[in-house]
Image (cartoon, helix red, strand yellow):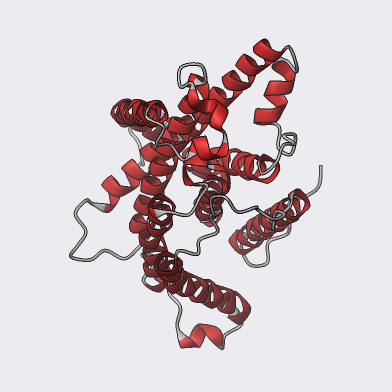
Length: 354
């Protein structure tokens, strides 16, 4: 019997779109609610910061007392508000991502599909809040330039958007860290919608580095956030908020959802033992992060400055950050090459050079 009726030719099977626009559209619809909540919270944070300036309770005034005019420096406070809401949304997105990649348990409330959906949506919102954080700082520099007659739009743009350009004080390192986090967050966050183009295995391997982007964001905040500049309960609370992240990361490594990612004694003796040892080292590092965070919170020694005490030279410099970025990008490239090589069928020849 013919595979199709006589007189009719079999229709070719349509190829799947290389970009997952269907999922993107669904996420953008949910983004309306998520981003609205984030903006309302950002406005609330701005009002709180404004109030603390008016009442003289803000720690920022200990660092920069000239900021006591909350209305004049409204873009600076908008920058702060976007920064804090952005960090909170990044925290939520990372928690959802780690929860999605961990084997399910009785405590799981949402389905894995629902967790993944909101992980993507909060990730997009986070990128938007980071951009709002940067734009508010850009407008603050424009306001300052208009008042002083120094600099200009190009200088302000370079200070805010060009990594390594900002050259004042702690910002030399802190702003560089924040920019690296932003420029890595965009491709790593949106790569999900291109996973059919780059390959699911490649996307999954590269997306794991999103935790490094989050670490850079927290580092940027603790280093440069004038609200947590000095020792105190608020700075300690920011440290403690990282404890659920460390615990979920450890759970994700010890009980991964995918069986192929689980580590056994046989893996340490097999041909891929070096890769298994690297995964074991990652588990050990995550395990050590938990007591380290508890120790920081218990002792209060969290890298904050002491009011009235002179601060020494920065322990981390721009060259160190650039060197660390080079290492991170090298590891990313090595992972991409390894995944691509493993995905090639056995005995297959490499693609010809063009």
